[in-house]
Image 1 (tube, rainbow, N blue to C red):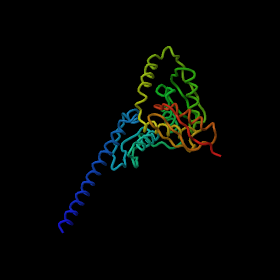
Image 2: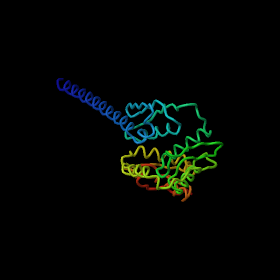
Image 3: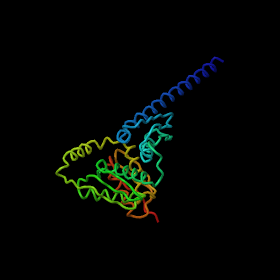
Image 4: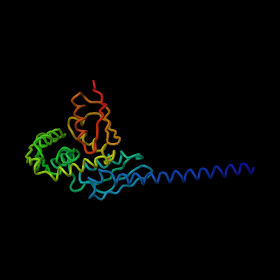
Length: 262
């Protein structure tokens, strides 16, 4: 009888210890998820001025607050979803300002601006974007003619864009020393961009570009190296996916394992 009582007590103690340990482990995981999200490149760069609350409960994350556009709202979700330990994301972020309908001029301009910000070889910060009936007008400064042409190429391939008027002024390398220094510093810290942020930006980039929006692609990032899987319609689509992804901030290299459909 005493042995049975002792065994039962021991079993209760083990169960209690297991529950306590599991709760502590879950709490630590939730704290890590919330901290990692706040410290991620995406949140530090695109949401530094936003009042966004991140709450994780047993790996289920709820986002509340505001985002400047639907694109950034989706970017926040993708970033958090890619963090280790996250089981699901309830994205309750509200978009600032008036509601913008899909494929409206305001929606398209915001989409173009967001996409340019993901690419390192264009000057999104020095580019003003406006839209009218599917025509995008770009005004601002470009470091070179090659950069101006690349901006046109990227924008023209964004889903919803019909035409591009690129009125950017080519300033020339001689008067861009500060920008060059800033880019060099960015190159030095590119390694600190977290994998979850890179994955999110890559996914959004492929989604927003017309030539890759319908491509069934999986994205995995490890220490800045992006691996693409899935299917492409042809060799040109596969090559373009590699080109677009390689130009996303933080990407060190691209391994494209996509197969050609058909």
